[in-house]
Figure 1 (spheres, rainbow, N blue to C red):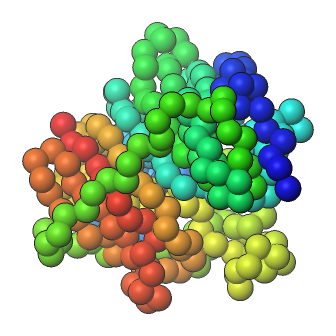
Figure 2 (cartoon, one colour):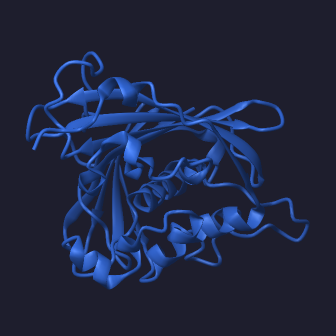
Length: 293
């Protein structure tokens, strides 16, 4: 079946400005959703889930940017023409320009920044970019880039973007320099969804089975948060301000309760990453990297 999308309409689509006010409680809930606090005696983790006796100690996990001023699953809207049931989240990247406040009000501006045809029956890649700014000062805090595979929308031919999506991050051909194993809770997806992603795939067994899984899966962006935790824990002493960028490729779903092992290779300011669900021996993130200051 030929695609019904209009490349010109998608690339020029207007989203408006998304305003998002969030509290310290939201920041703590997000951190709990990605597993922070599993060791209650670890002061580094505690800083992301506890505000302290004076209420000033709380820090925001950098990957909180994934849920701030999020425009929602707009591909489902009728005007897009996208076969939204066949959309797959392929990659996610964040560039941080300043540390995220533990609470505040932000403005998000979203745009379709790339659209590349893979051919009839092969789908298309759609890239969107979201700038997140502090609402009071206008300061740019983070830029979030998402790459999606539109499996049902290839073959539109002309009208897309020049070139192609960014090539995959090249992984080093040597043993990892460090490894970090982090647990996830059986109820991790039920906690993470309270930060804004209410897709029943992550909560309802019937919805998961309809999608081909025997049980609800963990959000890909929650898995990204676990990998960011591994970087903070292993290289940065939980100093979130030193993390300036991160990019991951989703290669398989993680399940709540998986132990996630992140292998890391350090080359200057770049830490290459691969995250594996060790009980199942499945790589859930690959061709991934984090950039340090």
